[in-house]
Amino acid sequence: MVKLISIVIPNYNGSSTIGKCIEAALNSHYGNFEVVVVDDCSTDNSVEIITSYPCGLVRMGVHSGAAVARNAGAASSNGAVLFFIDADCLIQKNALARANKAVAENADTVIGGTYTKLPFDSDFFSIFQSIFVHYFETKKPEPDYIATHAMIINADLFRSSGGFREGFFPIIEDVEFCHRLRRRGSRFLMQPDILVTHVFNFTLLKSLRNGFRKSMYWSMYSLLNRDLFADSGTASVELKANVAAFYLNAFCGAIFLHHGNPGYLVPVPFVCAADLLFSRGLIASFFRVKGLYFAIAATLYYAAIYPLAIGAGVLLGSLKHYLIHGKKRVTISS
Image (cartoon, rainbow, N blue to C red; front, side, top):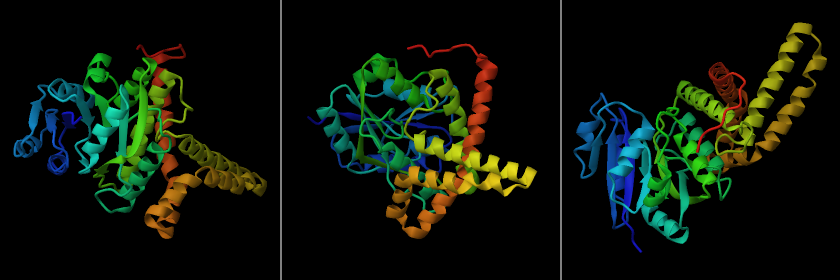
């Protein structure tokens, strides 16, 4: 059965990508879909770009964030199936047909797509991020959560769930939403052939800022949810072990510099070897997609620089959590 699929796209000051995003959606090789864009009070020329395409437009009265925008888009859609993407994602032409097939075969299951291994832009940090996300999101057939850059869900199930939690953190509303659905008995299924191409335009600073921001909010949420060490998508056990290895080695180096005793450096090569062994799947993915030289550079960045931002984000997120909640036990309401 060819169901009507509503592609829901929240947008805030996305003038550099929203046109490409809508155009890619409209070029889908599927006969029954609509595109609903929700503009969250953009101050650039996003609305002018959006209205130049044959798609639905919902204009928010007050800037309210992605969760509210997604809920508004879902409320204004007509599809039996909702396909959430971001304004900087380009949906592949065959994605809707594959989404329709996956939904038909898996009733009341939230279906996940992921990034293409290579992003729209070709700089090092964007390629690193696209491979990184693709690898960790497709690691498990039944993941811990489905990200909203490619989330497919039955519209009735979405509405009965209450939608994304509004007034939540500015990001990771998809993680909270999926955990809430899981407690109600819903299943999650990753379909690696449902793909969107992300436009990152990452520099070193943007890559580190992205890692810092996500790890800060993720740690705040994880402390609330009491699953800080869970293997959860891009917040994987591999990444957490990588960050721990980095700071353990930094600690050994600091003690060596203070005392001058080289014995304190003895654990460093063993920790590095264990970290590389634990991260071998990601490293192999770097190699398969872009070859040996990229894999070496990406591994060095992942192991020696990226943990600085992730660790700093976790530290600040943990501090914010305890400043807000103290040491009391807090649970997230269903």
